[in-house]
Image (cartoon, rainbow, N blue to C red; front, side, top):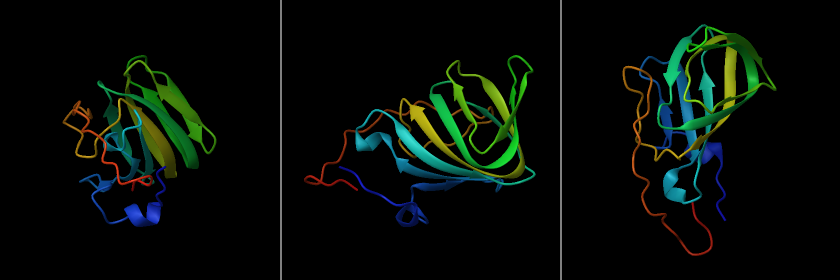
Length: 141
């Protein structure tokens, strides 16, 4: 069993910030946890425009706070986003998230990220091999 809080992740290597200051991602579950996916809480700043492309990962996103839009750069289609919206990037779509009101979202990645990935110039995370899980008895942190 793994039990973590966002409070204990804050300020550690599991909290990753965009160099431009547009977003912060708290990586709650990572590849090294050995469960086959990673789980993140991501906060994106109001007024920001963010281009992403997960060429190596499927991402599911559940928006729990905020408002904005999602542009599918493959088709040009724009989707409104608000609390309760979900989007699934099951086709590795290049996409842009435009934020009107600060967004807080819960994200699942498959394959899992390991925590060292950074977006390249195209917004892509590289595919990093997942290390073997570290087991500390019955409780892993």
